[in-house]
Length: 141
Image (cartoon, rainbow, N blue to C red):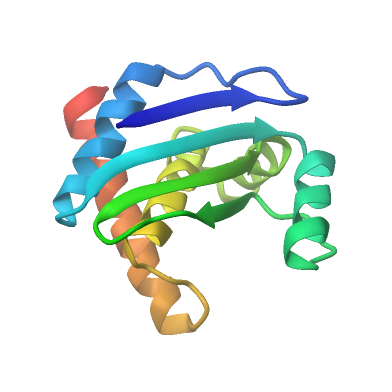
């Protein structure tokens, strides 16, 4: 099991990485899965736009791109997070306290089986995100 955090062309966010690791494992276990290797890469809008273009043929900004390497019940993958987009969304939605947590766990929820392609899937994803964030606040803050 290994949850790693990297930063490319931005500063590392000021978060308690050990608490985040414990929380991610807790959420994965909640879905009866096991933690493999998960890499979080914090980057800029421009960096993530290039990833989005190169690997997904999408030419637009996004807050997160995740690459799923899960096998059976072992959760593994790479999660690229645009700090620029997270900061902007936090201001737009007035979620400064939780927006980064939401995006961090969003990638994990994709890995454990959630999707967000339809309105119904998006609602289920949002509920799972909210529950996970509540777990974090209750347990680790």
